Length: 249
Image (cartoon, rainbow, N blue to C red):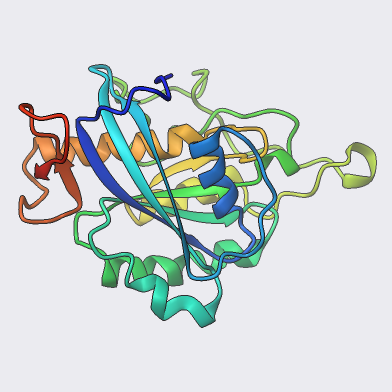
């Protein structure tokens, strides 16, 4: 965990958080920036937050600047303008609301249309605490497994792999809600569309930092391979000779 007092960074990445209203986008941002959970009012337009995180085995310090966008149709034209120049995007749905998952395709179409070609996108299945008492491992079917990638495909017996999610218990006996979108369905959708995949709980803090870090790792890998155009403002590399500002990368 990085010290809050240490403000130096190696890269600045612009992120956008998008998806239907009431999927917990603002709560994810608050959990990242303030390390707390808060029930929020619906976002009107956009909200902003930032945090420096350590990324990868070499500990690159990445400042993620996040724009939390409104999920209502009336603000759609406004939020689209924030997609431009984004290096990373969190596409969020609520695992207890089937319609929020079904609308992911529309949000993804907007993102692919208005964002830069090389934007790294992670599909975020949020509010899993409503369906299960603890965090579950993810299936190996997911695209872009958490870095560093395993040397060989994970076996069914691996602790980092799981099969289909078990049927959720009834709310009457456990207080948990039925899960409307299974882990495997979300992961297969992500694989089909070339997205990263993570499951999160803003309330419990499960997977939230992972969502931002895994995306940042993919962005930095693209930078290493020269896939990010240097003229694009999506990624800024700190000038080694100064502690202030940065230059395009």
